[in-house]
Image 1 (cartoon, rainbow, N blue to C red):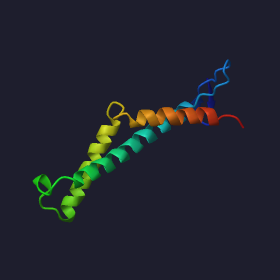
Image 2 (cartoon, rainbow, N blue to C red):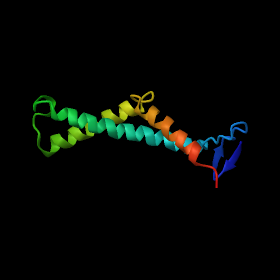
Image 3 (cartoon, one colour):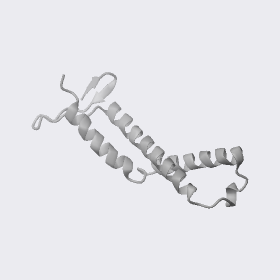
Image 4 (cartoon, rainbow, N blue to C red):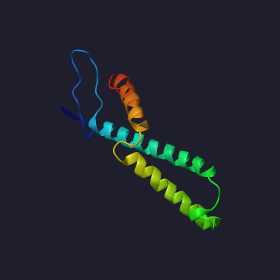
Length: 108
């Protein structure tokens, strides 16, 4: 292994000529995929909430109720996305984007 730009690069496979992504890039890609899944889940929860009639915990409505609902939904989405690999979207994204980084990077 060698260091490139502060991140460790995984050696390329000599037999196939295939390049692997650096560990720093890999970690950023994983985090980005988890964050994307979190945003996706938040939007899904937001749209689903519109189908529920008013009442219950958020009866009061108003600006305070809306802000509380938004913060609660964001936290639920973040928790779902960052716990044990999320719901699967981030894994699919990671595998597809990692493949593109490996194929498209490295040769200059």
